[in-house]
Figure 1: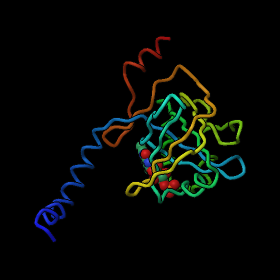
Figure 2 (figure 1 turned 90 degrees about the vertical axis):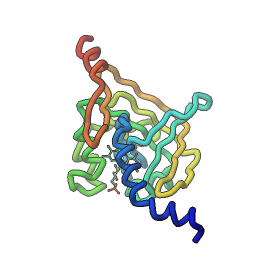
Figure 3 (figure 1 turned 90 degrees about the horizontal axis):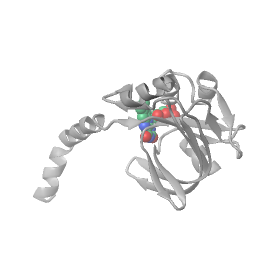
Figure 4 (figure 1 turned 120 degrees about the vertical axis):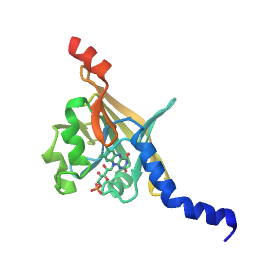
Length: 182
Ligand SMILES: Cc1cc2nc3c(=O)[nH]c(=O)nc-3n(C[C@H](O)[C@H](O)[C@H](O)COP(=O)(O)O)c2cc1C
């Protein structure tokens, strides 16, 4: 092993810890990614979501390869990004597997759902539901970067976004005050 490779290997545990701590400072909007259709559906909570392109309208989501929703995501080739409002942290907990219910029970456990045109579940009351076809899946480390081309959007308004920061839920105070004032 060269000296520089050995140095990096020795630093790995510390680097991983520092990276974890740094990511706790990265406040992010919370989403539930649903996939499949009304006959076979699955989902997970995710913050690793990013708007990607306007032409074509597309979005990316980073999903752990080990997530229970991953096989159905690849098989069905479609998913919906449900952008959560500040009142929906209980839905986020259920779809993060924090409440102990089985993956297939999550839809009954939390939220009310309306199928999109192609059958993928949209969370009622979310700030927006963005329904996509999976156009590309790129493996990177433990995760798969899932790129989706947007095919349907449903919008709601009035609520402030649910934010995850420093291992807890939060919201944007300015948006919450504006929403309350409307
Ligand atoms: C706030 C929050 C954000 C998360 N973001 C992601 C994410 O972006 N990608 C991901 O793969 N998992 C993410 N997770 C973890 C998954 O929600 C969780 O591992 C999954 O739903 C449970 O795995 P299972 O479906 O295999 O039981 C997040 C969890 C929480 C609580």
